[in-house]
Image (cartoon, rainbow, N blue to C red):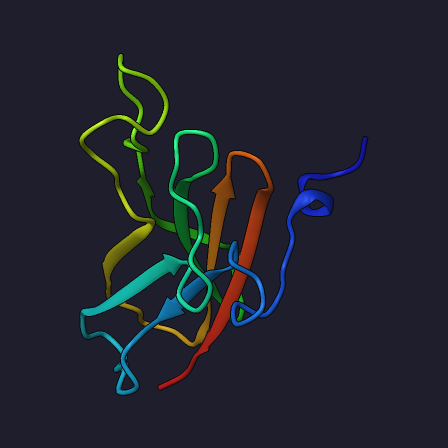
Length: 129
């Protein structure tokens, strides 16, 4: 069967609507809390419909030397569903999440998103001080 990594896709977010985009301040400083925003559909909008949506985004930190740490996960639970039918509901959630993080070491921030139709997508950014 293989490992889960075989099912995780990556691409340039400017050309693929499913890739999570990690935005962190340019002045990220060791030991100081900073807001990291992760979104899907930054350049090319992702559908947010009852039939096709981003279910969740997770953010991880991988220090240069060490294990990976789960920093958080956001779920997006409203996609226009209703007793009236698909896309007839009064509420939608866009796949954007803000994580306040404090990092003590260099490494990588890794974001993973899940589309109910197209599966797992991943991106990463280097963290240096």
